Amino acid sequence: MGELPRRHPSVAPVGLTGRARAEAVAAPGPLTFAAVPAQPAARPGPTARPGPAARPGSTARPGTTAPTEEPTPATRPAATPAPSDAAPAATPEEFEQPSSARVYDYLLGGAAHGAVDRALGDRLKCSQPGVVELARENRAFLRRAVRFLLAAGIDQFLDLGSGVPTMGNVHEVVARSRSGARVAYTDVDSIAALHGQHLLAALPTATYTAVDIADVDAVLSAPGVAGLLDLRRPVGLLAFSVLQHVREDAASLVEAYLRRLAPGSALGLSHFTDDDPRTGTAIETETAAYPRSVPRPRSRAEVAALLTGVDLVDPGLVWADEWRPEPGRPAGGAEARGHWAAVGFRQ
Figure: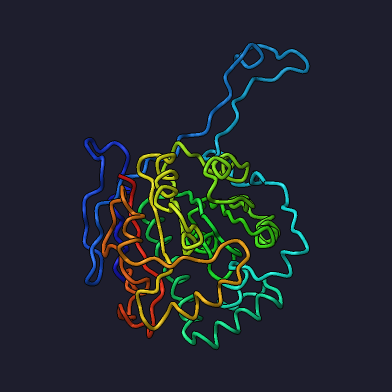
């Protein structure tokens, strides 16, 4: 019989006194887990308060029932449909302009894109031959980061600037883990949101909201977010290759989200950069065609400034392919790099 998987200390039984943060443990391979906050268990669902009609030995009056409390997002049965946002209204102009979400889907090999997105994607492939590898490496980092956070006890995720939720996205990683974790996707791209709402319609543990992530209040109050996630409990805030679209004051935006989330919440982040001279210039030139904003690559020091107030786990802020690579794949094996990546917990 093979070796049984070790349980991470963050999922130790509730009731260990003085356990505000988990003990550091060694992970297989050269890397080690940093201290991970213990995640509180979801509160048990509310039960009906017995009233006159519910007392033993009494007879209920016709047409009366015992009052019940509304279940919280964390205690709602999995079979209950997820709260939904109104379908976004896409304008004809949006179909005629390339979108970062849909171009990214094309580079990953997805199908939720149009001719204008494929045209820009093909130009990127010609001008920057490693762009497909960069997209795939970033998506691979997403999967590793989400698996890590699931193992650390995070069971609900808020994904900012999600793009099209296919090709190994967060809810698909959750499904493979069989954890039942909840995922609230968000993106300003209404066409990507329409695709997402269609794809997730039958999934009670995931939603997709068309909203500008720069508006923290609008994001956190949206029915697809507030109705699905229990913001009183730790949340995994995910910002994969999205903050380059926030050209000014991205650090304040990250801080605003983390301040509104519960203690023990986590951040998974990747950010486009031109620190590697083999990438950057051609990608910046072509993506200037995006209608909403021209992406702003940031240096490692600038990305580090976005992580103020976050305790990073090993190996810290590194190239995406160096963050806890899959067994058998050496760190730093990519021919070109385009994303800084990190995972950590709110201080």
